[in-house]
Length: 427
Image 1 (cartoon, rainbow, N blue to C red):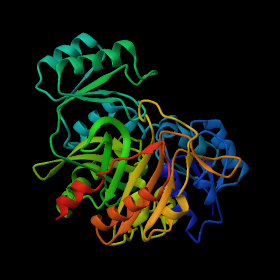
Image 2: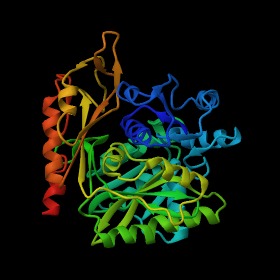
Image 3: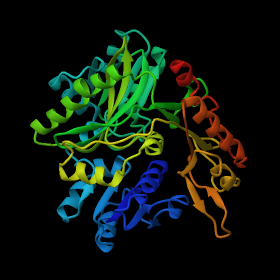
């Protein structure tokens, strides 16, 4: 099979890495890719959001399957365009992608399907939204309805901060486009957070292991939301009972509701969970693998990924199963100085070979580029996903940080507590 992976981050590197290992893969392409992906796949200089360009690439290279990594091209209808061109593609249609593209749509589906989620209200008027906030107790949760590059959620302890978020989203239009033309104000869910994913073929869902995400820039989950500073799997808070409830009460009802509405969901469907008093409640849906959550899942996957992606695309997941390593996996994300508010590009990254030689370690590139002199340089905010496996989370964590310390990159930094709480929780 000839496979095109759309995207150029750590998630896409992990997907290319897993797909290239399949005996079914004759050729793997990635657009646009990065310096690390170029060692596994043929990188093609077309942006993920260039819908016409991606369709053209798939045709020119006669690919048998297109795998779309990021959410933006999914919401923009890349799957629909590929389908219309007679090309097989893994991911949801634009209509199904509304589960992520519109928080209001997702909340309405939860109400219709009886999915446990936070209490909420929608607003298009800033004055009405501020009045609603004044009737609530902190923390306050304000969300832009549409996509906002992972930064359209504000959780504020002070009313003034929440009101400022409302004004920025509805009055100033901080996120551009339609992201903030409607906002959602939610009940704050207090509990342990985790991500739970399943492969979906329109009717059937095959669960994947749970992931614990670390989204804030600073140790102790402090600082700005950086869209992902690390991840580990398994997630100790997701017991077997919680996992079964997530499938039976959240993911399967969502799949059924989408099918009943005439917009069947295919691809990977994620549930951002908050576990309250031992029961999972939905924070949000995701329509693509997480980043860096995908890295830890691919590191633990013992099955061939490619047949699973084909089965989901072709509606043949009934009776399908996946095997997973008993080992734990952990990813530490190394980011460029200044991320997420702005970052420095061009810094040379040395020590990658030494880090990769450590037992159980795999380096997944995100924002990297190969310079003419052959050096690897930082070319984005999140730059490297240092991923390690081990017999337990403590061992995986030790290996990952040993690899981090072997990397010589003065312009980079990372959190030093990835997996720390999860390891404590599992003790």
